[in-house]
Image 1 (tube, rainbow, N blue to C red):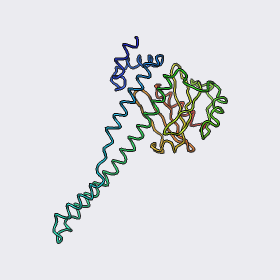
Image 2: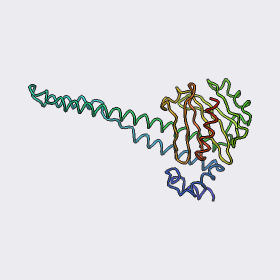
Image 3: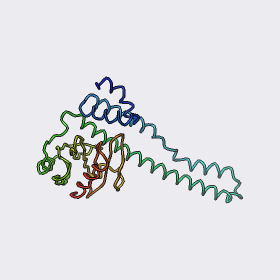
Length: 249
């Protein structure tokens, strides 16, 4: 199919509404068509910006104080003790609400950060020059990053595995520099991002496994660095590459 056919289906793809067979066909088209890939990336970013803007409302922090003041003014002083249980219940409700809001904010920030990394992966797939250092040799790729990022990392030996190292590039997130490593497995590309943990404070110190659109994401922390493995491959491939990276981290 030509670009004009797929252009009308990009919105459905971004919303996750395409049939699985059409979704696979469109992903194959995006790998070879930079124009459609860039258009898809722009629509993803717009959708996420709208979602983020729509979830920014936070309940008034003075709510508890206003409720307490109104209750105290309405009750006679001699019977004020009768309001203690109600005030306690309100206090508990406000505290629970605050904890829920903070938890929701944390989830939102974490999802937004993951979405930004997926966008970087899509941009790499759409780029005519996806890597700055091209080599299948880990002893060439790793030294290339020296002096370009403020940390070092190890790369696994891939002989005997289905993975091939394509190369790497410097990537940026939250104004911090990090490494993006590109691996190939069969006809698919996987991005491995490595950033200092301080650059991704939104992520909790735990291992995560998730999906964003049709992309799988694996993430974990080691020795002050946060790793992200992202690709439109099956879960087994993501887990195997993650295990190889963890073994040398």
